Image (spheres, one colour):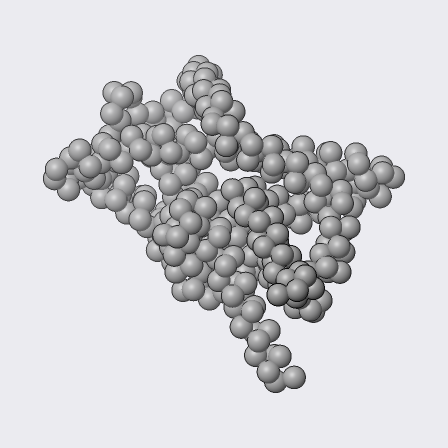
Length: 337
């Protein structure tokens, strides 16, 4: 094989090696690309007002940090507290005891009535307690493993460069990637559509359902209301009945402890409010972010992503399926052309 014929093979090997070096960091890159695209209109507006792109990027990146840090803290707290709740749930050998454990305060703390919740002294106490817990969570997040620290660094660094020089990077890719420009643009649109759809179209709907459920848990004096609300958020990604995976066992647990009125109220809120938010808000949020996948395919891709990619499969599963769908559409259009 002469040098000229071997050159393409060398190029493919080097390209594969370059891509392999990015594999450990694919999630920070993915999230950075999506967040940069979402805040791009804000950067453009600030650039017009300030007359320079750099300050607009810095301010927008600060907004991204204000969103990411609390989310990371909440997820860390969810992992720790959710593990304890799951352990207590499995410790009960009978189903009645397991369900009752969901609405019992294992720490022995008193349940607060609505009047107690509005007591200024109690509010200050809650702020002190949760403030200490939040500080501990943030310490655990920022004192995490080296890999996690690197991931955060790569995420913020990538966000900055995508916002500041993203247009230049994209122009270079369109000129050098061995894919037709039309097809590359279609893949890019599908990529960003998935990010908008998951973060805005699906994420905001699930967040609203979780907020309503958390308020209901807290108002009814159910212990660990915040934790149950966070779990409701993740369960809400399963359309139609996802939130019921949380509030139904909790309502049954209340009924088993004799709190029939609270159980009925929670069931009513779950059916009439939490369960219908999806139908009411999804059309509105889909104006800003709609994922072009059937509900069934979205659910299957999420669970399939979990099985293959682990926890991040929640994002990678739908993205892979959406890009595969676009590839099939492009292949069909090329045959018909």
